[in-house]
Length: 152
Image (cartoon, rainbow, N blue to C red; front, side):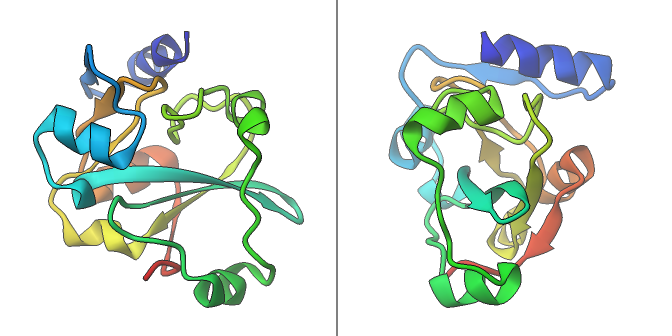
C-alpha cells in the first residue's frame, strides 16, 4: 500500500510528519479541503507530467491552474500530463494519492510559487484518503524540489 511507503519513508529519514488518514476520499482538491476543513487553496495538488528527459511532479496551490505559456517558458516544451494508467506505474502512488514522497522512480519535483502564500499546505500522502500538513519550506527541504512560477 502506497500510504505505508510514505510512512516508512518519513520514518527512515527521521521526518516527524503525521500522515492524516480519513474515512472519506481526499482524491480531489474539493474532497481533500472538505475532509480537512480548510480552503481548497491549502491543498497542495500534485500534477504528473512527461518531460523530454523524464517525468516531473508539480505541486501547486489547489485553486491554481497551470499557465501553458509559463510552463513552456520554464520547461521549453508544451505541458503533457501523464495518462491516468501511467501515473501509478511511474510514481508508485494511485491517482488521487500522488505525492512527492516515497516515489517508485526518479522524478523531478517542482513546487509552484503559489504554495509560498500559505503557512501550511496539505499534499496527499500516497493514497486517495490521506494527507500531510507541512510548511512550503519544509516541503522543499523534504523533496529537494525546485521552485517555479508556472500557475495562474
